Length: 114
Image 1 (cartoon, one colour):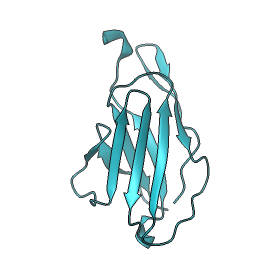
Image 2 (cartoon, rainbow, N blue to C red; image 1 turned 45 degrees about the vertical axis):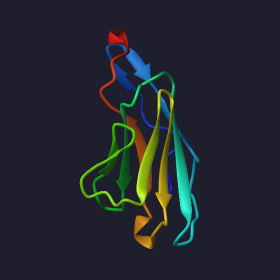
Image 3 (tube, helix red, strand yellow; image 1 turned 180 degrees about the vertical axis):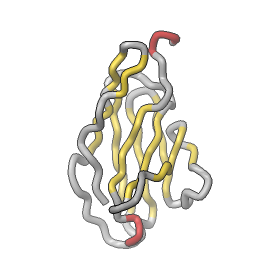
């Protein structure tokens, strides 16, 4: 699987929050491996973080919302954790079908109300 290094800033109420991912390029894994991807926000976003999976020729699919809640239909091998500025997506027992681009996205956070 691979993940982009940087997503476009999400601007809410004049605040631009930049999401940075690590690793910055491709990850090579064998079936059965555990793979962890990291996402860091430029300022605290609480638990307002989603993870998406995109396979070639398909639209992005929501895997995890609210940092750690699996979307209906997301296999249990996908898990999310974190809050504030640091988040992780872990795939435990990766399958060949999991080859995709994974991205994190800040969702619905308004710093001015916090």
